[in-house]
Image (cartoon, rainbow, N blue to C red):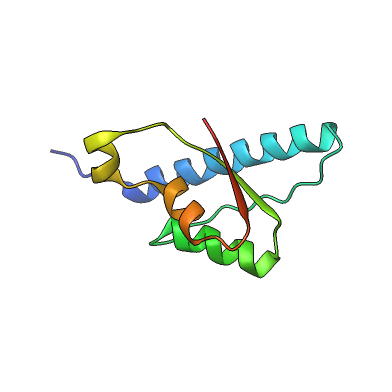
Length: 95
């Protein structure tokens, strides 16, 4: 079996994430909303989001949810649940 080039996969995922973030920021700018985007990479994404929000003194964290329930949610965990639980500011979860 050929070896998988994980670095290439990670680089591709980062590039796609940056592209998505930049498109979102463009939409915000067009609508007159000031937005700052940042690509976070961490062992605990919940901790990274909560710490960044505290550092930046944000008023509101807006995030989506995939709506998983039951066993899937237990296995995969829930970033939105973790952020809601640990954030010091308001959190809006959009489904």
